[in-house]
Length: 335
Image (cartoon, rainbow, N blue to C red; front, side):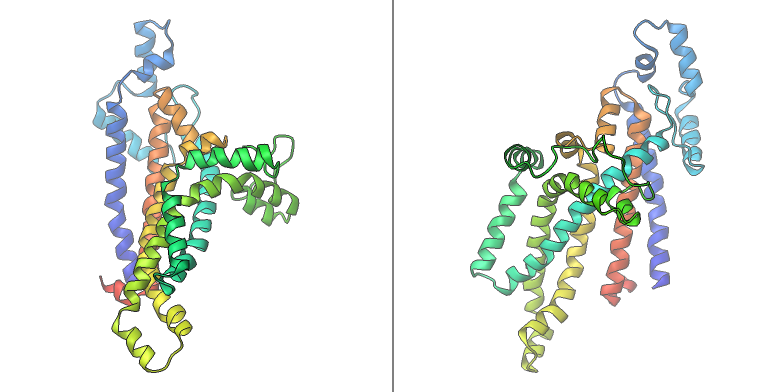
């Protein structure tokens, strides 16, 4: 297992290097002049050139990339041209909010999607299956931002059960930051009131983001379960007199879930990169809003930082999925 894990880790290194090159090249090809924008509309040509020299943007692109890459290895992700704040410091503020939202959405999707898909396959072509397929199709067709607006109208405006947006009330003191995830920090601090407050703020955006992965996981789990139930080992288990429940949960579910892991890993990355609309609707202070502001102001250093950190997290999650394959299916260790 250790050899399998090391092999997967080594294969990720060229992916990360290639990602940094692509992100750097695309950022430099963006239209407009960020230096002139940062200098202001009244800046003279000499002031713009001086600012470019200060930021190191007057050097050849290869030299700029080398400085950027070596800085990344040393923990220096550059600084915003407009605010002059270190990009890494901003990411440390905004990234935990997005991670908390994505973790909550994926937890909802996995906790409901896996058993729903298994149940749908167990009762194939009967009313539980039809209900599951209908709800899945409706969920995957519903735009997340539109669902968020509907939830705000009902749960906030109509019922008054949940807060309209934000991550934590401005008039209250959040728990001491340990992980940056307010719900987890509240549990660490054993502050039940702060945990419930954070959970109320998290409920609607997480639910809105979970619909698409939930529907896909349900449909994938159903398909892989039906395929597994047609295998010879299931027929043999039935012939040996094993109960339907034992076959389904002990043998079929394990093999079906291994194929669904791919969808779970991919959706984690897609949610990280697709939080902009949900964060905007619920005023959630995550990297989506941070990247949107950077695009609007042509501030490419924060944009590069967001892209790199999302790409790195995507790669790490897929590494975890590969390792999970090895645990669930020993044959995968030799692939």
